[in-house]
Length: 418
Image (cartoon, helix red, strand yellow):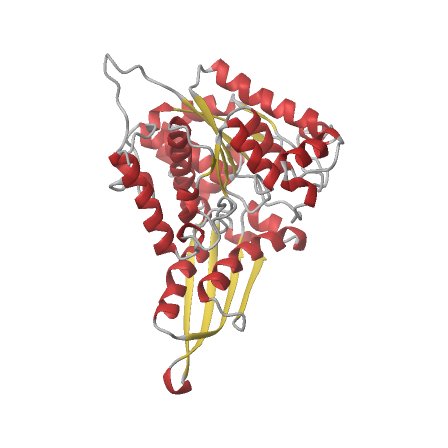
């Protein structure tokens, strides 16, 4: 386990991990998972940063992270903890052992930004609703203030911000948002911006590396990317690749490499957690489906192939999700064949180790003076961000093997100093 220890000549450092969607299932698993790793109660299963050669990088130790976050819902972690425990994801022994760490995290959760498309209700934090009604500049200043206060209160070397909030309604990038000047004008003019982009701007202006684990817009607009370069901040996203799409990006290259013509690739997903509930809204589902389908279109490079993804909310599944895929393909002599698979897993147990990985890698990138898009992190995302001018590069590929090879090239470069 790559848990750092300190000697007399090496002062212990602390790194903040700020989770947007702090009371959600993924954030809860991150908090309890980190506590279990610190205490030696958990094996680092599912952590890419614990596999050689990645584990040899100078990464933040599990005991070096201090947690805080933003949340728009009333209440505390107990609802997620109860649900995750009831359905076999959080073990009662871990919940008991992590009690103090969870309480420390809870003490650092602040009201988040209620997206303008959210419907009011008794479950929403009134402070988040008030912030949602403020101007973009006020929103950014308040959110950035929380990050700066957190960093100062705990004497943190830096704070890594990870967006784990429920998916937003799909937003189109407005032409003016593609330059820093245009983004600044939109903010000063009080134009509506997605909450995820407001969070990204607040993080970047505060000098915090930003990870967008959601399919929401986040730091995707060109103007926000310029802002990250100007402030010397690394960032990555979007939409963590944890399940069905991960399988697709491993299998689809096989068909292409063997010259088999894929005629149709139809998928169907059922999920029951907060994300599933959010995705029952067609306007929110649109951005998720686009990201899930994009990889197949790029890998197969055939405009005639039929691709489709259906998503349904099934409340009784809770944090478990199931994906069923049907692949119809044509081989030699025109013979038509099919492949079918069903995939089932815990959404949060798959996502949370990757969040820890990305927090460690973003902290490393910042410590190395990297800025802008973390192209090395493409293998973690359905729709990875790459700098302008990288069209056609291996790091823009959705082929998981190509992405992972590029990631290992980066790792080896860091280790050898090349």
